[in-house]
Length: 420
Ligand code: LLP
Image (tube, rainbow, N blue to C red; front, side):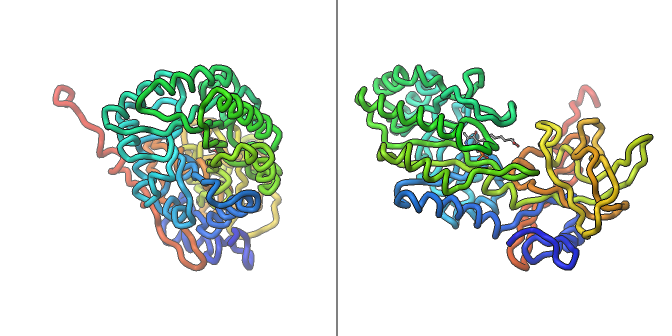
């Protein structure tokens, strides 16, 4: 199930990565179906141990990896979806996920996106502001629907994660200030198109301690009790994203302890629990397979130049995130490299001063833990085609997205007559 060396050759499940590179070229994202299923089931089992399976829904956060094959795999395991755009709604439905298991989050939903979501009858729309609430009600009335909504509250809790992925502090753009919630639920009651059935919270991603979750959940539980005293029928709580994962040496919280915390804080409310894990389902199930293009000696440094770049995996450039680079043929580490991509930016650097085996042009390496926020954040910068994606299951592997061609990228450009 795991990715590791067999006879010194790196395998994902039972497939040697060099076989994938030979079939499909590089760079290419590879995902282990077995690992994705295992990660999903770990959530299900942990929550099932503390509550009945009717009492929770795991809505996989599609933004982490929205490949249709990944979504279908999870749908077959019973997952719902957390979506943040009309595009993700399209994907989730196409993967066969029931609208009744889809939660729509997102800080700026357009009229067209809301219309589509309301027509489809999603499980819940998470509301980010009073004007959005009013807009949802107006559209729902026009479509003769009644929409279940939850306000996403901002509890002003520090998630103690990277500043760019912290979302639950008062200075962040997300959610409504928890202190204004009573007024907003009262407003919702006056509107004909909505039923405020839940409270939602998400304080950030890649959380490696339970404390911030606990603080946020306690505030949410207090709010639910307050709202009930004020006569609101709150039947659902959406606890946002999942736990962090190991990229280097982080020790993520134990899922069983997470589940016990949910039981202690949330279960006494007797609500339906929604969680929206993304990274912890797909992150460590994926890698970005790449070839060494060149080894270049600088004045003081050796650069390992890969055929993968920041446009394929933005996390190191954007967040300074660490992703291990592992050679596909095992050998003792003895050379210090900066591992970089070919894009014309100094920021196109995966690792600085990393000790690796001696490598040469043509060698294969895996950029690890790239299953979440990898392919989905890719771009065409430098007119580099989006890389293909491959799903592995046991000895089987299949392309689940073809690599783009340069012609694909350029096909949407047009030269107006007055320029030509
Ligand atoms: N729910 C909501 C409302 C979210 O905003 C997010 C992530 C999730 C769930 C899923 O969180 P997870 O289980 O994956 O931690 N691009 C960044 C991560 C951005 C996360 C945005 N929201 C990165 O590469 O680290």
